Image 1 (tube, rainbow, N blue to C red):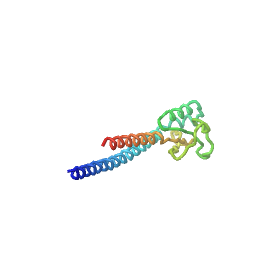
Image 2 (cartoon, one colour; image 1 turned 45 degrees about the vertical axis):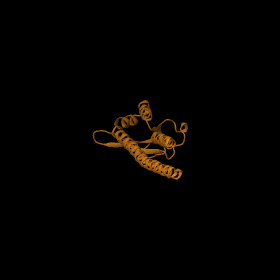
Image 3 (spheres, one colour; image 1 turned 120 degrees about the vertical axis):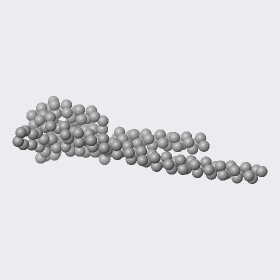
Length: 168
């Protein structure tokens, strides 16, 4: 009689282990798809924000051309107030090294590493007959927010899986 009970227990343990492993495998696949989707959504959102910004630089061009520093600085501060934008500056179109305006001051920032996306937008001022390239607007967008979201998901996933394993 004892022999049959051990076999039944052994088969039950194998079935439970098999179910847990399949569940873990499927959960990992779902997690990977969610991470990929989160990154794609973040990149699409950032791209859309950059495109909208490119279309809306007309008044900035006029302010730069007129050397209206308070308005230009207000524009830069407004950019930085948005999620994910960390540093921005305006430079001469011919001399990229000459920074006309920046916010926040670069020396007040931690290093801009690979976790940032850099985008340069040409700023024009137009009149009735011509279009003049007056400056380049450079924006550094941080990817830290999406990375934190993904880390949080992975930690939650790991916790749920550990609880599941220990409960079985």
